[in-house]
Length: 312
Image 1 (cartoon, helix red, strand yellow):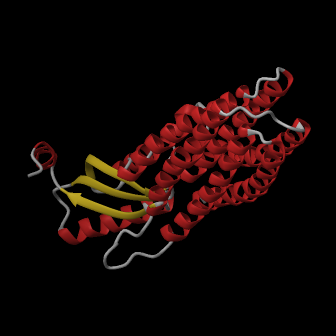
Image 2: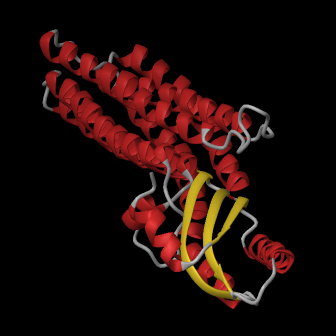
Image 3: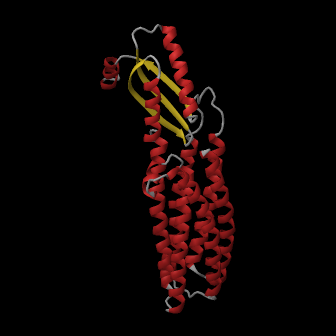
């Protein structure tokens, strides 16, 4: 479900950014606008980023093998991290260079109406992609704020596209202000200042995305809602005296590894414990199909505490 949603968002963003990039580059070469050239690079980088995210989805969907028994789900987080680095290195870097070059070697914008039309058309494409990404993101956001949902989301490609589209819309506003000020005030360097503003915007966006993608790549636990549900199901299982503790790790947006430490009733024999574990696994997978691997360790609370305090 999460993978299908993020793929729809990526395809929409890919198509929109490709068309926008071509339009922006044409306008930049026609008018000589540094800010518009920076925006063209921005859209081209975004187009490549969406391609990498789709590649990451394809890699993550491969079945487990002997060397990767838990599958390749984290490839999605790896490529999301690479995308964040590209936004910083290419998007912010090229925009910074163009801005400085325009400030040092000033050249006026010609025929600014072309840029205005391109910015308006780009805003329509970017706005459409942003609305699609926002709608899918809201399905997972619930009653959380956007920042809370961003920090807690496990779907890196989805929030990557949303942040990229948001940065793109803000970048278009900066480019428009730079073009208007540069032309009407007859100060070409203001176009370069706008390019520097776009560079700063992309750098901040890239740092935020890289930080969150890194956390997911290292390994984040499941949400509080999921862990609470797992605990309730485990506690209600017949024969379980106590849930000592649990460990969850996301391998992908819809792939969770779960380890449970359970204390079973002393009256149960080994075959009976095995039956309870099988029943528990069935209930957990029915309630949470995203659980791709489940490990249950029968042990007393004292044994669990000893292991937790001194795992060596």
